[in-house]
Image: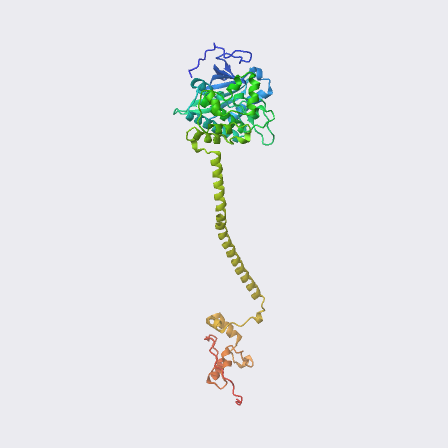
Amino acid sequence: MDRPSTEPSEQASTGPDSIPFLVGTVFHDRYQVVRCISTGGMGGVYEAIHVETRRHCALKVMLPGLVRDPEMRARFSLECTVASNVESEHIVQVFDAGVDARTGLPFLVMELLKGEELFSMLERRNRLTPLEVVTFLYQASLALEKTHAAGIVHRDLKPENVFITARDDGSPRVKILDFGIAKVISRQDRITSSFLGTPLYMAPEQLALEAEISSRTDTYALGQLAFAMLVGTPYWDLESAEEGGFYRLISKVSRGATEPASVRAEKYGATLPPGFDAWFEKATASEPKNRFARALNLVAALAPVLGVTAPGGILTEEAEAARALQRSSVSAVAAPQRMKTVSRPRSSWVWTLLLIAMAVSGVIIGVFAYSRVPPGRQPAPNAAEAAPATENADTSSDLSSQAPLSSSPSSGPAVSAPPIVTATASAPVDSPLSSALVASSSASATPKAKSRGPRPSSKKPKDPLDTR
């Protein structure tokens, strides 16, 4: 684009619905109008310069004749909302929006695009190459995938609303324009359409006032765009030129295509590759359920028909279904394996905790039972276990206190101590060892005598004739 003039000598537009200001006028106190770019059904688009930043931008102002129409004002506002909330390099960026206080006109400010509309490109070149067709449709589909995911249907895809600009490296970049008649799909309510759009690219359901609008309405338009780019003429161009005009065209479009695409293309002087008829029939089917479900699936199916590699690794509907089936099969097989690997450690821990609980319970029960035994009835310790305890000084003290050894007359008659060493009862009465032990136990007065522990029993049966 040439650098615009800022001289306020040229009127921006003329006519009853023209924007009432001259070139050079500062709109909304911040946008200086440079020139009129185009005028559409809803408003005029102007090149403007932001007064403070000096940035060039596109200023779209609603036509004065439509300002009082609430529906048109809502559509104008929707265009701003869609372009602002859906992030895509293939949708025009919106910088500002509002209502001008002086004129009362709604406006929005967008990025200024450099390039040309697809409509003017087709007028200049007539037909595009298969690679260009697939590239443009692919980029447009990327934008539609995001708007459809947000519940927004464009409803007016046509060559005038597809803008071809260029990146810094010179590669083409598609921008989708004019979401002014886009429809936001509600999940709660059935959304019906009013008669909006361009009949040459409109889906049959758009012509039926009670039909439901969905994302497949836009995939229908993509199919018609593909035909127009390859042939250089819209599919329904013959019907639009017939007698009866607009209403005859609407009647035929609502019934769907009755002539194969290749036959219609020959009438326009073009030849389509084999396989295009089947693709076009599905893309533009009268029943939405028979069309491609997604815009990217449509492009993936078209690429091999035109002998072009599908960009970005996109898949056809059949390939997506096969991949989904494969993922579900792998998940079904792997699920039991995951369950086993998780359950084994879990069961081992359960058994470990159960054994620990049983051991702790046994210890608690044993301690409780032992504490319930009366002191006098506690079992005598094993002789082998009691031997080392006699080395202790406290034990010797207990033994001396239990067996007083004093034989003084003043202490009264001598009381024989209870037999502490049980081995004395195990020897025969006439045994020298027995006499020695008895004498030792009665005469010893040393409290620190050490016990060497019980000796092995050598008791013999007593002779019944022994009277001693």
